Length: 266
Image 1 (cartoon, rainbow, N blue to C red):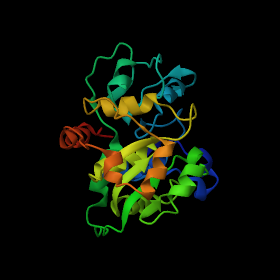
Image 2: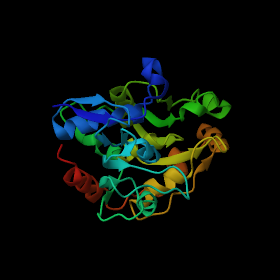
Image 3: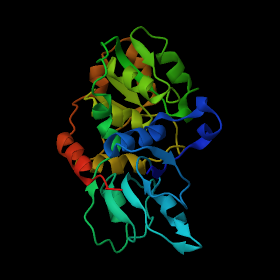
């Protein structure tokens, strides 16, 4: 039987050109590990949620107005001071901050975003050659940012669109030596393929900062200080390695292994 999975479809529900690759990676990763067909289901009838800052949606998991249980594997929070029900089956959550917001939890979920398993999904496909010095991945709210538009006109700088198909985004990230991204899953996929990266902060107040803190907490580390938008202009004269700085993701392999072992049996 198919797994009924909830993920955030956004405008992509009606327009294939508006599908945020990070959200639409969720059914692909779940299908890979389950070896079952995965179908979209609204939260009130879904069995499972995985990738995304979608933990707040758990409140809508009801049947005949009565609370029901979900299998939660890697979903996360997006704001401080939230509280989530401990009634669900928590196999994994994105990070420590998500874990701390779950009330009366009797389980010990593992930490990590399932997007970190993108390299497993890629296995068997040709490894892309390195073609660009740096890839810039703006969050969809940042795509018209003037600093992004200026930077991606520079030699060796490649614009990666979050609305491209998942496989195309994964291929593009692997083709770069470095990644600068205001999209969180641009950073997560870069980590999965060990492409050094750094967060860009391009918009004030439009993108949750807390979800990044949550993601990096799974590694037992504080979020590296985000780069300001003006940093993009320095790509004209400086090495992106200097912008990324000392790149490390402690215990990445352990997080990946833990996510695989914690995958629910449905």
